[in-house]
Every structure is written in C-alpha cells, then in structure tokens.
Amino acid sequence: MSAFKVKNKQVLFIINKYSGTGYKPAVEGRLVTFCQQAGIEAHLEFTQGRGHATGLAAQAAQSKQFDVVFAVGGDGTVNEVAKGLVNTHQVMGIIPKGSGNGLARHLGIPLEFKKCLSYITSLHVISMDSFTINNHLSINVSGIGFDGHVAGLFGKNGNRGLTNYTKLVLQEFIKYPEFTGEIIVDGSKVEESAFVVAFANSSQFGNNARIAPHASVCDGELDISFVRKVSFIQALGFAYKMFTGNLNKSGFVKIIKGREITLRFSKPMAFHVDGEAMIPANEFKVKINPASIRLLIPEHHPKNI
Image (cartoon, rainbow, N blue to C red; front, side):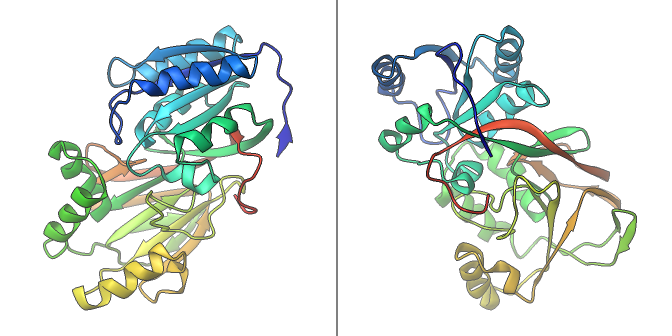
C-alpha cells in the first residue's frame, strides 16, 4: 500500500444508473456537492449499455486528466471500468451501488452512501491483482459449475437482489450434479469432484458470502475453492460457515492456491465472470495478473486485504 499524490484535483465518476439498488437522482448531486466542498472538480459520465464503461475508463486513463476514476454501480460496472484501467497507471475507485458489492465489501469500502463520500478523498492506494478466465478479465470472484448456472438464470430473470438469487439457488439446487474433469494447477494435476469451482481474488461473491475467507487481492495468487455438493440438511451449516467466514473449516470445501490453472471437461460447463454469465465452454485457462490495477482504498480498511 502507498499514498498517492493528488495532481489535477479532478475525478471522474462513471455511473450505471440501473445497477442493483436502483437509480437515485440525488446521488450525482451529492457527489458533485461533496467534491466542490473538498476542492475537487467532479466529472460525471453515464453508461449507455454493456461495454460503455470500459471505453469511458480507457479514454480517461489515456487522457491522464483525472486523479481517480470511480466506478459507481455494482460488480458488473466495477468489472467494466477495471477492463479500461488494467495495466495502466490510472487510479481506480469504487462507489458501491449494486446488489452484491463483493469487492467493495472485501476492501472495507462503506456501502452506505453518506459514509462512502469521505472515501473519495482517501490517499491510500494498493496495487491489486486481477486475473483472466478464457481471456475475460476478472477482479473479484469467477466460477465454473452451479454458480455459473445460476448466474445465467439470474441474468435472464430480470429481478435483482439477494432474495431472488436465493430463490433461484433453491429451485436449481437438486437438479444440478457434481462434475469432474482434468484439472491442472501450476503444472500439477488435481483430482477433485466439485459442484462449484471458484477462482477467488477477493474473499467473497458478495453479500458477505465468503467463498475463500483468506483470499487476498495483493498476494499474486488465486484462492481456488473446490466445493462439493451438500444435502439440504447439511446446507444450513454450510451456509452458516460461508457467511461467518469459516468456509475453509468445512469438510465439503478444499481451497488451494494457484497462479495458472487449466481445466478440461467432456461437455460445456456454465461459468461466470464477476457474477456475469458467459457462454459455456469445455476448456478453461485461468491466469493471475499480479499488481495490475491501482485501486483506491479507504483510510480505515481491513488489515488483510
């Protein structure tokens, strides 16, 4: 972690009006007002569709005009902005306005908007890892199997939020089987059956569902969680461990570290990237990209990030 020097006193907010918590027009006014009071010139851009945030972020990085480029939205918006800033010197920030806010929670960025405002003037920056899964950039958690299957249905459902996600999980849980395949981690073969294979840069999917409790965004490695299928009776205890940060103590989970992972399956497998469903694939190549994103973190942040 390091302190960065404010040069231009200008920041850019890339705003997704329609992220998980819904659009509140007062947000932009409060951002501008806070920045004015702090002596910062605020610029606002609103996304017009999928991929637009990436283009806006890339232009901002190239211009070298802004001290920080903030993603204002959910995990999908954060991912898109990161795509435009990865492997540049541009500092990125996150104003969480989604339904899960996994990376923001991991970093200790306040979810309450009023408390989040002071984070805008933080001077603490980390060099955060990112990774790719079949050339798709991921900065939080991506996965193969049941979570990818549910992500696909959730994207089509149109109803966001934890309640609707939980309904889908319960509906699909019985039908989805465990799977096996060829798995190679850093050149060594791994023999595991799984219901979910999660690649964790941060510790959680979102909503404090910690799939890899000890994952760090700065260690140059991924935490790979192999999750076995549990019965409905066992599911309550499993969920308790996950939401209390103790999933590593479950007998149904094996977590290993890795930098390069190859997986091959006999049939196309559902997968997601930071919660966004992708087209199923038979083969996966996953690779860490250490210290590839300069990210603003709060002054008061968790000790281990």
